[in-house]
Image (cartoon, rainbow, N blue to C red; front, side):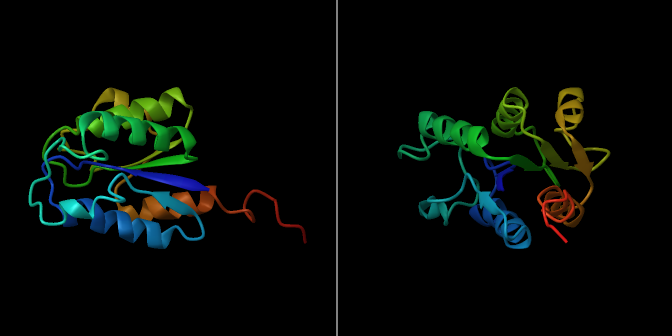
Length: 153
């Protein structure tokens, strides 16, 4: 199973954008994770990542092409909006693509006060959890062969 790790990048630091993704990727094993930050260590000194750069993977078109391809080929879109301070336009696009491609969305977001809390987001999300740990559990349960009866006794 392939899980796309969506969430705010613009305006966050490199560490803020990568640490939670690494934590989730390590906890959903044996499933694979796709991070929109992969191959972008050149941004490691950024304290506030811009919405685009003059590099193939980080220019406007490069971001759109790869992120849309990732959403199209994944099995689940895992969205982390915890602590967001502004609306994440890029993540909104990824949620819309997920809906268009009929990919389940696992949303991690506070119940109150998050600027990304919108009717479209709430209705597209198949699962809305308040913590990363609870959302990780859902990923692992959805992808468990045992739970779906694929393991023969």
